Length: 331
Image 1: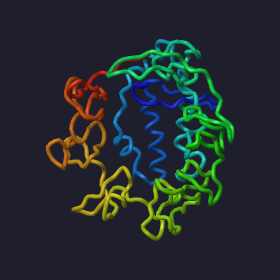
Image 2: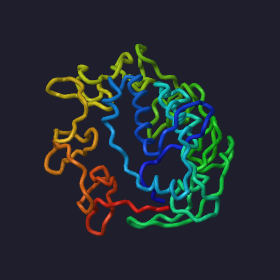
Image 3: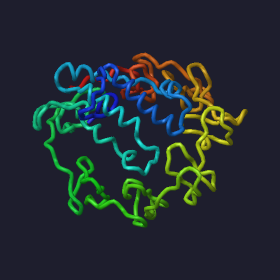
Image 4: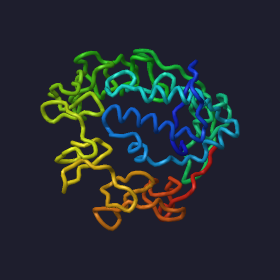
């Protein structure tokens, strides 16, 4: 079913004496927590540069659902979740980097019981509303699905409910234990913590191997940390603003390599030339040239091809052309 707006994290309260976060501040505080980690891991030089990069997500249904009592929000739990997110490891093979912290399971909790009428997954206590797929910008109702426990190793599974910790739901729709060293794999998450899947293609399986850290040799041309890259020999830090570069791959994923200066630069902002991405409240318009321009998001009823082009952050499918519109409030 169609889900409006941002897929928000849900988080459980803990005993910490943390100040609560107002619902209206949830997104900004979550972004600040993520940026704290990104700076620590070497993807940005400063937190304010990081937070300015991301556009605020527009989700009109969230507050309405909380006000209607279909979602309960715990401000203390939200603060605990943010603290855990900011402290996550930079190593992509570490346990806390692979999945959301355990505390991030109940920030927003659906209050609708299994079997009751629903139109949005978030309304349901089980997190899943079984409703038909809607045509265009409409709301379709269904019923909240019953809770299904994660399957055990060797048991049949479905992606929605998955497997117990330490397992994954394979292509054969059965749970398998995470691969140990040298085990065959299709993707990183099929390997045990501390390992990644090396060499997997559409035609052959890869093998679970450890990834090197900063300063270590990188024979597989991959590195463990999000702030590292393989220069062909060794894992080195990715470039941030001002770092020398030969191409975009040598810069942080949130920067680009300026060819004239051969330096990593911040993503462009409103009114500046762009090559696919813009920072802040802007989108890259390439409709008239290969080199685009960062534009202000468009009002409703203006034609669009992607949601980031719209002030409402929703590009509605139409019979002739798609256009920016307000998303239907389905709850």
